[in-house]
Length: 425
Image (cartoon, rainbow, N blue to C red; front, top):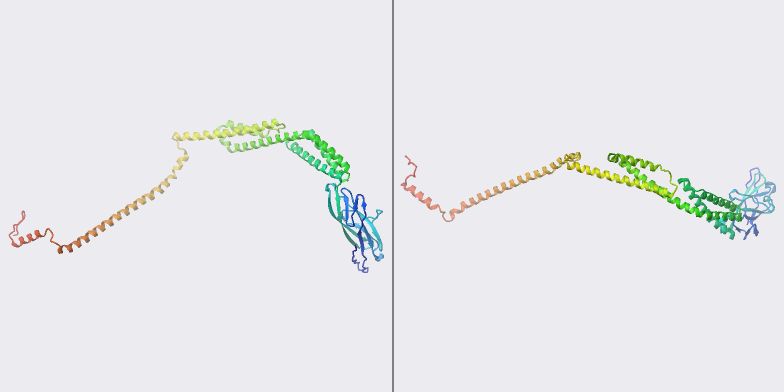
């Protein structure tokens, strides 16, 4: 592989084209538990440093301008500076080559099997001022694996470390918050945590055998602690559950008492004082450290709630019966007297419209009767008028003969004056 670099010197020095530097990855076979499969692939066991070799070559260039070029590693790669086969800095001059080595960080054994991709950047710096910098990047594919011992150690480490963390965190919770402590459990948990810490340090130092031994000791300590630890955990859970339930009941009772305190004092002042004292006492009761004591504390809290609820109900029933007796004795409550005041406007709203409807109906009925009477009078007048125009043309009326006789008597003059009447003089 060949790469060309363009060099720009200062205005004092003439511009000179550098020759190409070759940075070639080498097939180096097995080295410290790793071997390279070609120029860009390396296979290495977990926990072992990964040694990579490459060749740096330079074509002729003006030596008096640049001097030698030394290979350095960049900080981002996390690897030491390249060296030659003797461990000295990897330096190359004009028309020369040099085989260099660098070491990559080992893959942790907890990574087990897999493939990782790493970049190796070589920085070539000239000796002569102004120190020209040239870079070359290589890519290495690392196939890493865990052998049987490493695999067994990692599996044991995962199991022991998780159990140790659970035991330590559980014990710390019960002991620090609820003062439920046990020195035997504390000693065993501390011993297991120490063994796991030593195993971690040994694994980071690639001391697999030593790490496995620490993990075996830690696993034995866990097995010994499990008998007493299981009993401690169950007992502590039972105590804490009773404690939390009792505190919740006491809190509800305290809120209920605060809401109904005035009514309870009026109804039964001695009971109100006693219940308030009991709430205060239960709130400041020392922490229970046995199962029986926790059940007793929970029972007292339930009794407090029951007594308070019953007394509130009794006082409410007494108040209701007193109100009924006052009503039956003829003493009208003030609330009822005040309720009569708004009833008057309601009656006016109902009665006045009804009276208006009745008056309007009577006037309307009277008008109807008057109109009917006028129509009847008009009809009778029309009937009589029609009868006077039609009678002369019909048969003589029954009174006609009497009228003729009176007329004839008057004409003869012989008729005598009626009784009581005087003749004209």
